[in-house]
Length: 426
Image 1 (cartoon, rainbow, N blue to C red):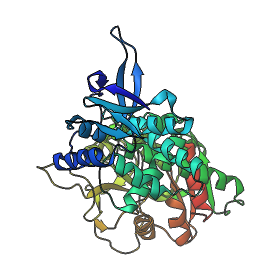
Image 2: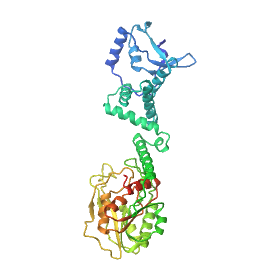
Image 3: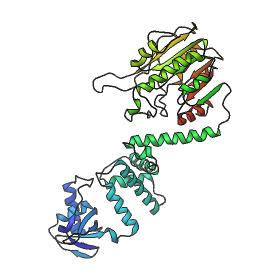
Image 4: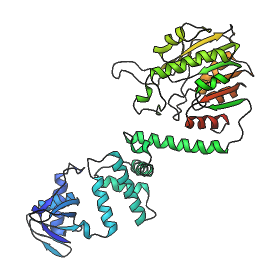
């Protein structure tokens, strides 16, 4: 313990705690005056031309209370004169206590990035486990709340430390470390966990059913070697720059420029006409702005319905003009046919179907929607193709209708998901 003048003390301006209760500080000052200072605040010594300056690390409430005293007080049996304070120097503390004080100091800074805050909170829990192997996430979270002088539910305290621990363990991965926010970082962690799981799963799977096939690669290339399909159902990139949107929902990690989206749609229409049987159907999901372009320019040889089929998703979706516009709750599907292939019954051109909320792929379509479209166009044993199959919606939909399905996927991660789905493992 060291006794130093209050005038030699420096308090960093970036400490997180800015508000203090005057009544609580006065009550603490009264306690120090009558009972003594039980635990000196922690400081670090900084050299200067006029002598050392002592910078506060932990204990601002005690410092403020002592500044209110107009007489001496006692600490650890020693008399501390008025205008002075008893302190513990960081460098003189035991290793574990010093680490604890440094972590408390880090957590109390306001200029922390989310990366630094998560690492500091994870390190605090790791230190507590070293001291007490039975330490729980909830206990560390409650300590963290007390450091920051806030009151939070036990579940929130636990979840805060759990999240920080997970993020710290994954900070070596660029997609986590470079995330713009904690939420975006956690989505990257979940995506990596899902990819690792499905990759492991795909390596252990048995041979796929003989009536289902997954091809990995560019559909613009692979479609050229295929033939004999009765129906194509395609959900290509829409070409609306979705990869540049915010972090709501699963990430759009695929290219989605207008040029690329329209090029894929054109290939599906033109190559699709060449590889389908004389009588066939085509369902092509597309953006409203591009529906007319695809219909009028890319469907050479196909006959088509002039207006789109509307997939109504219910009260979900985003508002493209926040505070002014309306919720975007539908998507467009272009329907084309070849050789006057008949449909099985009459269906409204508005299909109401809730999304599956599949967070593994930002553009995943619900199995029920695929089932309803395919059931109108196909009979048992027909061959169907999904040239942009993503996480594999086509496979359970086709299997439920006894159809032979082929899917093509460019992204290895989504191909692993599709393969697991094709084998009925997820």
